[in-house]
Every structure is written in C-alpha cells, then in structure tokens.
Amino acid sequence: MVWRNRRAAYYFAAVLLVTVAFTLTYNAGMRVWEGRPQPLYRSVEVVFQTFTTTGYGEDAPWATPQMNVLVVVMQLTGIGLILTAVDVFAVPWIQNALAVEPPTAAPDLANHVVVCGYTSLGETFLEDLRSRSHDYVIVEPDREAAVELHREEVPVVHGDPESRETLENAGLADARAVLVDAPDDISASVVLTAREVAPDVDVVTLIEDADLAQYHRIAGADDVLSPRQLLGRSLAAQVPTAVSTNVEEGVVIGEDFELVEVAVREGSDLAGQSFREARIRDRFGVTVIGAWVDTDFRMPVDPGTIIRTGTRLLVAGSEAELDELRNATAASVRPLAPQHVVIAGLGQTGVAAREALADTNTRLTVLDREDAEGVDVVGDAREPDQLDAAGIGEAQAFVLTLGDDTSTVFATLVARDRNPDLDIVARADAEADEPKLYRAGADYVQSLATVSGRMMLSTVFEDEEVLGYHQRIEVVQLPAGDLDGRTLADAAVREATGCTVLAVKREGDTVTDIDPQEFVFEPTDEVVVAGTDASVERFEARFRD
Image 1 (tube, rainbow, N blue to C red):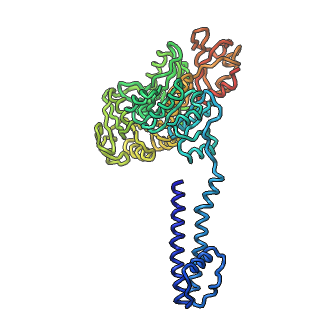
Image 2 (image 1 turned 90 degrees about the horizontal axis):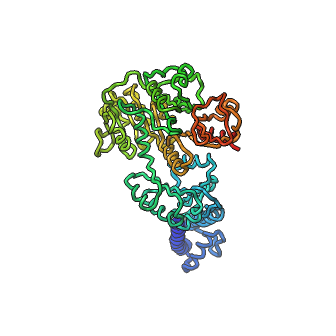
Image 3 (image 1 turned 90 degrees about the vertical axis):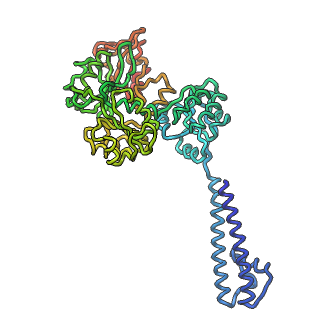
C-alpha cells in the first residue's frame, strides 16, 4: 500500500512538471513562431485539451512547422500519461477488486494441530499429517504467502502468530497441539501467547540454536526440538568405528524383543548372497521386515535380492538373536586401530556429529571454511587440495554436514574420486536431493527435512511410535479387527498390505513366536504391526472393524 501511494505521488508530480513545461513552451511558441501572443491560462487550456485529445479550440491550425512538431509531441505525451494513469490507478483497483482474501479464521476443528510458520522443515510433517488424515491449520503472517496457500487449498489463517486473536481464530483452544516453526527470537513470544490462549494445549517449538532451548521451556514449551543436532548424531551413528555399534537403538516391543536397523558392512558373511541364500530367519531366528537397497526401501524383500555392502536390514528379534546377526553383518576382520574420520562443516549439525564421535575410538579431522574452535583445516570441502590437506586419502569415513546440497554433491564427487574405499555419510537439506547424493557416491544420506518431519510427528503423536526420525517406518498397535478367527496365512497380511505382524498382545502377554499357519487371532488381541505409512494405512483399511 505504501508503494502504491508513492507511485501515485510520483505520477501527479510528473503530470504537474510536464504540464508546466509544455504550457511555457507553447505560450512562447505562439508569441515567437506564430506571432499570436496569448495569456498563460489560454496556453494551459490548450495543453490540457491536447493531453486529453478533446480538441484545440481557436488556435488550430498552426502555420509554422515548429508549432506543429510541438503539438505532436504534446499529443504523444498525453497518450503516455493516460496509459500510465491506467497502470497506476485502474490496474491496482481491478486487482484489489478481484483479489482472493486469505482466511482470517479456521473452520470448526477439534483435536487438530496449529502450525505457526510454514518452512521447508515443516513440509514433511504436513505431508505426514495429510497422509494420516490429521486435521491441521497453518498460521501465516505474510499475506501473499497466505493467499498462495489458500489457493492451493491448504488450511491457513492469515494473521500474526504472536497475537491472541489470531491463535483464537485458529481454534487453538480445541487443538491437540501447536507447533511453532518460526525464528528463535519470535518463537518464545508465540509460546507465551499460546499459553495464554490455551493453557493445557501441548506446545512444541523447533529451534536452530540449541542454546536457546532453555528460554523456550521457561516460556512454557512442552517440547523443544533441535533437528540439526539430532541429524548430526544420527549421521555420526552411521560411521563404522572399532568400538561403537553400527546398529541404532531399536524400538522395544516386548521384554526381550525389539525392532532394529542393521547395516551390512564390507567383508561380512552376508554380503554378496541373496536373501534366499542367506536364510536369515533360519540361521538367526530374526524376522526381516524390509531392507534399504541403494536408495529404495523394499518391504517385503524379494528373496532373489542380493545383499550388498551398505544394504540396511530392518529386522525384529530377541537381543541374543540380534547380537548374532550383528556379528554376521560386521566385517570378518575389523581393524583395532583408531579410525580416521573427516567431518566437513562445523555448523549445528557438524558440532553434534563431532561430539557424538568424540567418545569413540576415532581420530577426527574437522574441515570448515572459517577458522574457529574445533576446526583443524580451514578450506572448502569441494576443493581437492583442501580435502587432501584434511587427509581424505587415508580416512576411513567422511561425514558431510554442509548447509548447501549443491556443495555437498560436489564434495561427495571429489571425495569419492580421491578415496574410492571411503565411507561417505552426507546430510541433505531437501529430501528430493537424497537420490542425487547417492548417485554422486554417498553411502548413506539423511535429509534435514525428513528428520524434522518425523521428529515433529513422533513428538505430537506419541501414540504413533516411529522407529527412527529419518525413516518412514511405523510401528503401531492396532485391534485385531477382521483378523479374528484367522491365521496370518489365511489373511495373507504381508501379501495384501506389505505390513509385517511382529507380535500380538493377548491378556497382558506379548506373543512374538507367531506361526503363520497355526496361530489364530482372537477378538481381544492387539496386533503390533510394522510397515511404511502407506502399508499401515492399507492394513487399517483391510482389517480394522
């Protein structure tokens, strides 16, 4: 609005200056060239008649070529001023008349999620909400962004998230939770307002600087999430070291039964065999739920699929069975000497990765563009000479925690060229860039957007347990429903849905030894199911009452 008023002022000033200039020139021309002097007010009248193309009165025609040229120039100038007036006044008026106004209040909702701020970190979370049919509404302070979301049929409320009225219009009092994804200095203010509007609602904030978490909690946040730090620790967990496990902490299903992810390392007993040849269930007693092969998650796994180095198995079993599988997936001979790991990028993610590896049997070298505490080599990770200075040629692993995906791709290409045997673990900001990094030579990639989304989902919906923040796998407990009186073989659960039944809760006990041909479900059973988001939805659609 300010810019439009300024444009109008500029236009009127230009009209005034042009009118004065032409009036004086025309008046002088009539006196000198035509020999017909006249008062200024008469010249002003002729100038306006020319600008508006309404006629020229008694002055026309003119005898001298100079006056005819002057009048032509005045005519063209008048046309230009008219067209400019249309752009300055008429077009904005029409745009305002036809403009779509963003909603300032949400429809009647209950048990929904109010999202204050719409950033790339929250996109995956919103996709998960949509896929699970959870209601939500976005509070967006920017009018143009709110209009765009409204046009895309995204539930949105336009207003200041720090305003009590805006949060009330978003239905915060009846919401399940409010997620604040705003700049750190604004988030605390939003939390205070949310607590005033709905004292009992769950408040979750997303922060970049982990040091500010205490202020968010003091303001009243129930959970303060720092996805960059979680991503750094998760990336560090993928680095094979002599004394640290390669298997992440699993989801406990029973007292001695859990679901974990296991990476197959080079030189292990399983590498190079097909799943059929490996006979994992017969040899180790564990159930293979699925597997990450290259960049694809396969569930269920085709028996003919080859288990290659880097294949990640999603398996369920007892602690003893999993320990035996761990030994089989590790290299037959592992070096006892400290491993050399190079970390590129010492932002929030890089610091978390460095701290996670500091307590392991690892020799660390940190490469960053700027000299700071903890940086060993100052340089660009995309430059071969700088990587050589960090010792990339002799390193066993390379952890890339750069904040730009394009730079990460180039650094991955150079590092793979410098050291073909290097384990490369990379951060991606966008989920869409993960396949590109794998093609560039990365062994393992996690995106900040995916980690953030799954982290938020697990926090807001605690009853929907998730194996890992970076994985799209659910472990849920559901009623037996239409499985009552049937066996797994009869119902063809895996074939029909892609899910795997891990256990059955029956009368307070957890049954994990389920024979597909013999075990018959009872109406009061609770079924523990593992699968992707889509496969769990298929299971619910097919077997729930």
